[in-house]
Length: 215
Image (cartoon, rainbow, N blue to C red; front, side, top):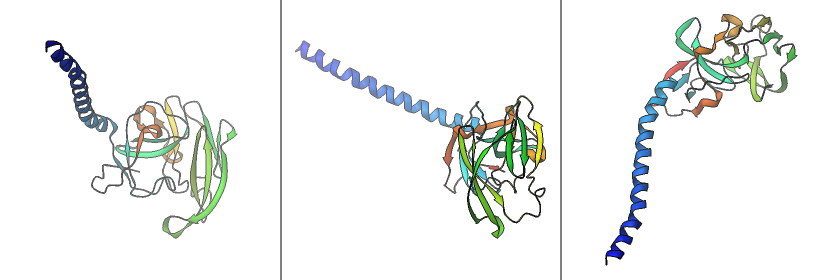
């Protein structure tokens, strides 16, 4: 009888250990989630058309902290002229890069960014836009140019050449003729970056939580 009781106790011990481990993991996750959101500053609500066609007006995203930033990635950062605001833009140049734009075509260190014309479609305020696919590094994305701008200067389609200082970034909106970005107010210090493309956790579609605004 003693031997049988010993075998029963031994067979139940692993199950108890597993239950304890699951409870422990659950408690860790419950505690960690608020910490993660606190560090990230997310969720964010996108409140301008400057990232069309990648992000739509009013779209919401979660983000989390990431330390790596590269060309072509989307980032959330503190707006250099008003650090109480968060902006979301695409990284075009990193420290040491020479950036030039000629009639909308981007050049990095003298090399043109590869792009392909895709289509025309209605965009903001009943205007027509031409949609292009750009490839920068390992990132492929789409951008929009408004067809009826008065001149290239209106949309800042010409820029530079300018060299990005070390520790800073040159960023653009994907809605190239309707975005306030590095062409207007300069570079973004790396320490002001909240999150990048690899750390976005997808769109937040629930209307219950608006979070912080992004421009």
